[in-house]
Each structure stands twice: as structure tokens, then as C-alpha cells.
Length: 91
Image 1 (cartoon, rainbow, N blue to C red):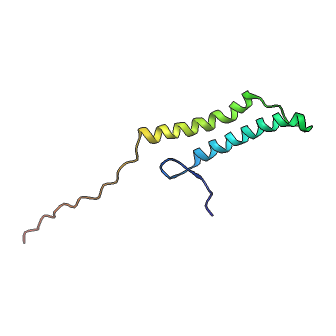
Image 2 (cartoon, rainbow, N blue to C red):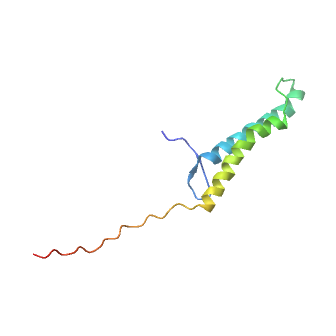
Image 3 (cartoon, rainbow, N blue to C red):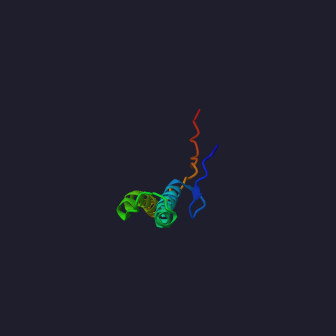
């Protein structure tokens, strides 16, 4: 079974995009839960921007670093092997 990775702008599966998106959704869910926890009487850990950045910085660094690497270093083009004519042996 293949994991359902998100696809980048080239249509290829992207692990870094999937990780960055999941991290962003988790941080946003934590922030929204913190906002509504008070009025609803729930107990949840306080939202801390520093901790959110600890989660998001490596994930976004991975994603944008990967995009930069893909842009500046395109994959090598595979060339077809060139056949050279054989020398005929003299008999």
C-alpha cells in the first residue's frame, strides 16, 4: 500500500510538502483549540508561538530547501548510448 503523499507543482509525490502541511495543520489546530478552550471550559496547553516555530521551522526549511535544490539543480538528462562502428578485422 502506498502512502498518499501530496503532489508538488510538477505533479510528483512530495514528502516535504506533506510534512510541512501536516505540521501547519497541527499548529493551527492547537491555536484554534486554545482560543475556544476557555469559553468551552476545556483544559488545553497554552499556545506558545515559540513552540509553534520550533515545529514549523525545520518542516518549512525542509520544504523550501528542497524546492530550491530542485530548481537550481535539475535532474541529469539520460543520454542514449552512442554506438561506434566496429573496425573490421583483416584476415
